[in-house]
Image 1 (cartoon, rainbow, N blue to C red):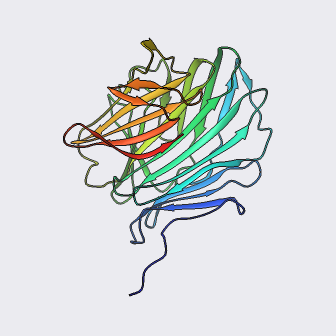
Image 2: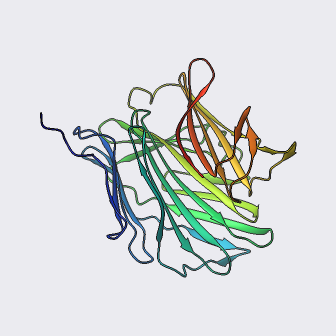
Image 3: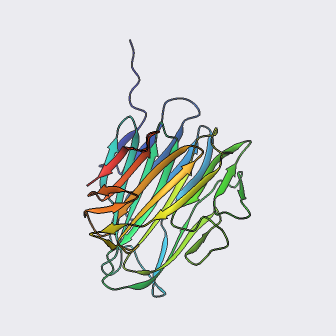
Length: 280
């Protein structure tokens, strides 16, 4: 019996990766090229290209722009039945570094594009803006009260949720998201900017919510420029996302104990969690 090859492919030498859920015609996919100091991506579902182009953010520290000072290097590639995951890094001005996380959850039907800015030696005012080179033939629609953005072609394609921003649109103290770009602001030594994208058309009309969680370390609260945790719920499905900005440490959030740098897990019906990916 003939067996199809894996739907995802990656070459560290060629500096390119294809993340794809399945071989079916309507399967979501993400193509990434990270040659030299450039970072391009194409993201789509079947024949519908959602965006294509450069996705390097503009970052300013105390109003001074950071410059890229190295080539992109691959930190991690992981692919199994649950997820495809690529993590890249580039050095910026001074001691700053930028890490890009790209994750595609096959069966759970979501993608995540997240930037980790770390390496600050002292708290500073961080202004972060990541443009999304959206397909101009697609339509954006926003909610009146909440921060998620829907993208439509002939049908609703995806819903994008800026997890580090408040779910309620009226609170813009930490940034804004209009679908064409994600802006975040913070005073600290680092910043986490995750964009969660629901790819399941059957879920797009279901109620959704997300919360940034309190992270603890030996009974002390962890600053948000040290680590961040999130809970995402769509309908009856829920996921946990955790990322440390200051290396691995033994921390707790929402009753979970984590020692890894990065964790994504789904909630099961009995309240336990099942790990999709963890990176030490």
